[in-house]
Amino acid sequence: MLASFLLSLREGLEAALIIGIVLGVLVKLKRTDLNAVVWRGVGVAALLSLFAAIALNLLGMEFEGKGEEIFEGIAMLLAAGVLTWMIVWMKNHGRTLKREIEEQTNQAALGKGQKALFALAFLAVFREGIELALFLLAARLTSSPLQTISGTLLGLIGAAVLGWILFTSTMKLSLRKFFSTTNLLLIIFAAGLVGLGVHEFNEAGIIPSVIENVWNINSILSDKSEIGLLLKALIGYNGNPSLTEIVAYTIYLAGMTMLVLLKRQMPLPVKAD
Image 1 (cartoon, rainbow, N blue to C red):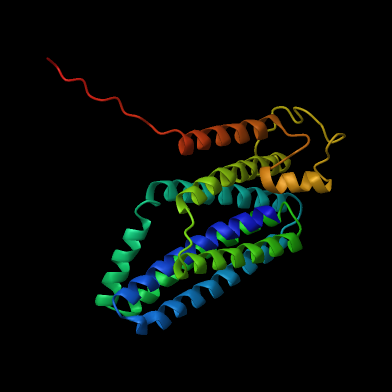
Image 2 (tube, rainbow, N blue to C red; image 1 turned 180 degrees about the horizontal axis):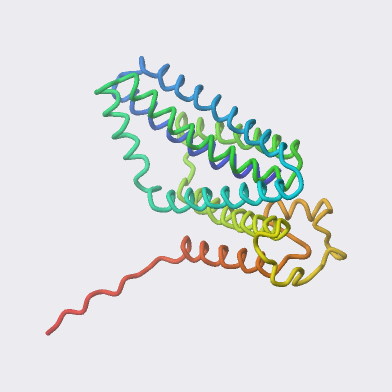
């Protein structure tokens, strides 16, 4: 539940911020007559994202045995890949995101108008919606459907409330701190997806385990217990992981943490005398 809540809060807030910026620009341009076009784009994107989420889940139910293991492995690794792209993209574009959206909205409102604004709102929400649908498919594989749905609804409600507060009151949320914090949490979640994805491919015989069980602590904390399932959904916990699973998890976690936390400092050029 916590994983789906965090994912939906993050994706929902990104979409809310983009739509809020678009509507704010329209107010400044005195073109609030175009607000309905923006909301139509949001509605269509949300509906198509919901259909995509349902279709992905129905597709997953069609597989059994080895096919199911391969599907789950692909879904987890694909979700981890998209999540990685999202974290890196936000790290590189977070500071200029508002300005870029304002420029696009200005051009749309003063140019083609309705079609361009509809496309801007639709693509912003649809991108977040498709990403969330994929993430929630991977999250569902590690938790119950009820927990996934509950966490998603709470996250989306939280995102809507935060978005409304940001643009209708004097209260300000440090978005930089918010995204920096959630980036770190999502890196841990993505590392868990990588590890679990490799585990599924181990089970399917596609990726060799090398060492099937490096350790087995299920007698202390079973990955089938309530706490174990919670940790599995959040950090990819496995009580008896394989060597390739541990290696994949460790490399991803270390690499992404260094990428996000460490600021590369280029040495200053030394002038020749």
